Picture (cartoon, helix red, strand yellow):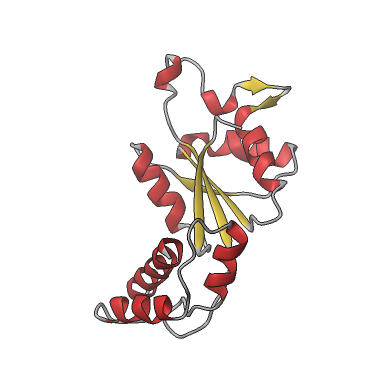
Length: 169
């Protein structure tokens, strides 16, 4: 199952980076994980979660199931002319990034929300999230979207990581 392989790879590489396993242990852990699950065509999120519960995921056999979402908000809004920060544009009486975060807060399967933004915008986002009672982690984004996603993913604890644009609720 590709989702389990991806999750096992993510956790194995993280365990390697944290020096919990050796480099040559990465494929062994992935293989061990894949041997524990059966292939399911077009699995539902519930089936993916159930399959991952059967797998060792952190290099020493312990499994911590968590779904994280990384919301990207570090861009310059160049598609909108760069004059207005798109994530803070108002839509339905709230900034777009707030509406986006609220959508994920309402999803009971999401355990953690990380917003990746420009460091200079942290005070703005901290105020917005506090005003709306939203519990999110802020991390510094990058110069390019892929770098922003990478920085956000590094900051998560999830074995499943979703990404979403902060200006698209």
